[in-house]
Length: 80
Image (cartoon, rainbow, N blue to C red):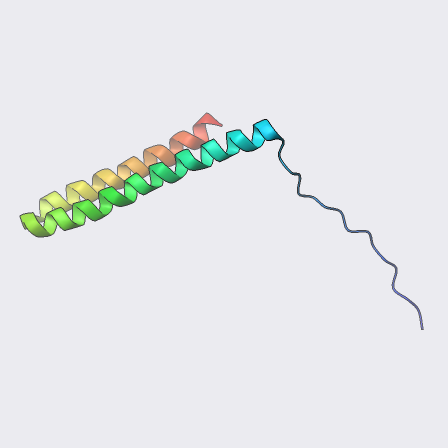
């Protein structure tokens, strides 16, 4: 009976340094706040359209939120 050779396992995750971790945390917080604001615009738009009764209002508010999301998503990728 042969024994299996032990293959060393490499740890590929690198812990970020102090400055890098702070920068990443700030970037993550900024992204979270932007996404939260987009979600708030969606919900406020839906609630406002129910009170106003105009489908044009709801379409324009939701369309603006989608456009804002696309601008943020594309802008973040272009910046890198």
